[in-house]
Length: 212
Image (cartoon, rainbow, N blue to C red; front, side, top):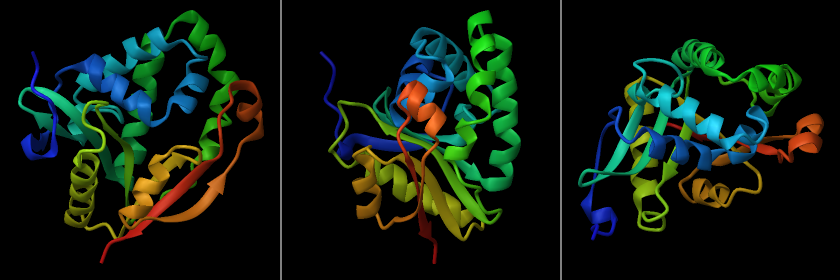
């Protein structure tokens, strides 16, 4: 019998290349609509590739850029982000690694959406810190773990000399209310009609917190 996860037993630490499939599932939960579009709803291929990317020593999906919320030896949540210049460099590395592992079907699909997905996400200022993924295990939700992870992101961003923290979230995601409660504001809302029609990708909201 496993011990229930709760905020009192959570320790935040530098993420390690452990539980890659769980990490991939946590990442999927942050942006299922976009991942379904990118992978043309092939979840097994998504899971295989993202699990591998999590274990690598670089790239936008690497554990290197994440803090982990650990409940004992269990992964209870992750927060993955970086200063904008590092994000810009690592995103390209991650996409190349993804293409290396893609199936022929995925490679055939990607050109149809690759030019549209980026329009969901406004440019990130060079002095900002970008939170790419924040997700808590289903057993841990509602127990303060998301708050701990996000507060730590604010501190990581300040320590990096950034003046603001940016993130993007689907407008229909209940996490919007969580981010507002944590002091973040809605900056812009973006819709891309082509992928909304083809894969049901909803509008996304850019949220920002200025760091004083």
